[in-house]
Image 1 (cartoon, one colour):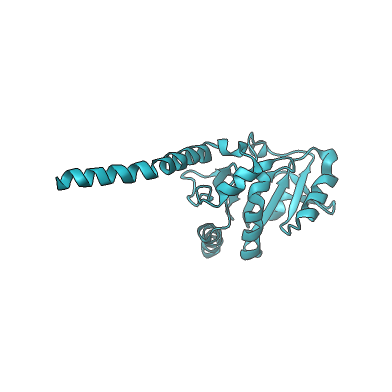
Image 2 (image 1 turned 135 degrees about the vertical axis):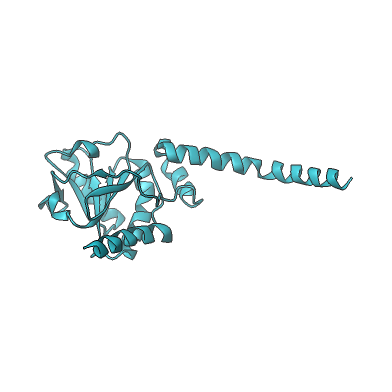
Amino acid sequence: MKMSFNNQKLLTIWKSIRPWVFTLALLACLRYTGLLAGVSYVTGSMLLKTGVMNANTEETPVAKSFNYDFKVKDLNGTVIDFNDFKGKTIFLNVWATWCGPCRVEMPSIQKLYEKVDGEKVAFIMLAVDDRKNFDKVVNFIKEKEYSFPVFVPHEYLPEQLMVRTIPTTFIINTEGKIVTKETGAANYDTEEFKTFLEKLAIDSNAKK
């Protein structure tokens, strides 16, 4: 009788949490396949708060080398050789003003940017809008009052940055290796991710 009661209790609990289990499983599937990039701004903002969209902090087992051989232009029109960022830990985010999921994750990137030591980590917010929409990028950043560094491509981008899904974020260590690549919107404003970035910088300096 006692066993039957316990089974019934477990069944009741399962029925109550089952919708949440399936929902979280679906979100996790969308998150790690990159399909979550297609969600709306409102939906994405709500999901960001659940924790299921927290950015990955696991390094890629076999890290690929990053191609620095291209140039970018900042919002003042200054052209910068990306080779100038060699030797730094880099947070590189590929985005566009028309991309809803990009807008969803930007507040978390701004908060992360404010917390991380700029001397240790270089933030590169690379807008891939059509070149004729440069002013649109400038106005968007001013309107949202974002202070992280924003750039646009100058002439061309290497193949590894010609991503199919945006936003896509690359974390590059001081040795020029892509240690992790995040596809789709993510929440970067976590203590775990901040520690991950700072640890990369510390470990790299320790090797010098």
